[in-house]
Image (cartoon, rainbow, N blue to C red; front, side):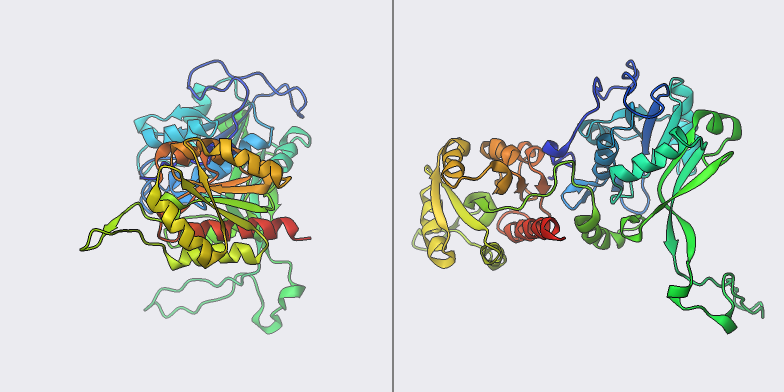
Length: 430
């Protein structure tokens, strides 16, 4: 089973943040505008999602959904504390692993009928030191730190009481008419006689649901997040992703791979990939023939993935354990088939591989590593890009930067190869 708290090396925690509720709030940030005010990020993540079960921690592009916004919030360096409000143990675990403190919401605001505002008001009541509450939606995985910083500065520098995110839409709207009423529809925002061209119409601003920022005073006195001196922050359409139903997931995944925030360290241009054959190229099963021969299988999709990397000048080096004669035999055949060099490694692969990295005059940021077990943890942590199959043990998942959807021997290597090439193309794009 995949552990949803994966990609640990891309996580960051706020100073003095132990993830526990009820401790002293961390010191305020002296270099930030409004340093005299306590600014808190708050992500609401109830466990009882009706559309997609435990949607907030479902893996999206190798990262739990909530991890995308928590990483952006922490890396913005604008918050004195980052919180997740939840009623679920697994969500709490994931939240803490991504550097957040946890507001364990009460049953009264955990019902299906409970509003976001009710939960935020409870948080405000329990945390009287917080001056500005930044409600960030977990379902907006393309949020970046610069969005947060620019929007929050509208409150801290320009004196607004509330700021919310919008996106510009070019959609003509018509009045809904129920069947059988005999009523005719009418346009809301255009004149059909003078229908404008898209390039001649600036469109309309619509909430995209990424975030709602407001002061404590506004929430307590007005009972809302949009009021008093209010302003919007416009985000480009490519960053405006809101996941409501399962059918959105594949679309969101493609969008986040292109426009998501991957951390302060930019995606690496990989020049060398180490791939553990056992458990990555193979599925962990040994087949016995009627005459007692031992056999393993390799998926053609994974072989294609290796060739895709080679075509893009990424060297692939296959790893086999010195203690595994079956894998060594398979590697010899794979070497002939793919042209990859094969290397035997010991119980700690890093001891053997660091010499290879040095000899090729590379740094570990130039290296991709795919492993599937505890022995791979050090290499998974060091490599610029690293991945494990979906069926890897928890200890390996927690060390990897990307968790594949596919299991070992069933297309996981191909999936990681596509991820490597996507990051390479993003880096090289002018």
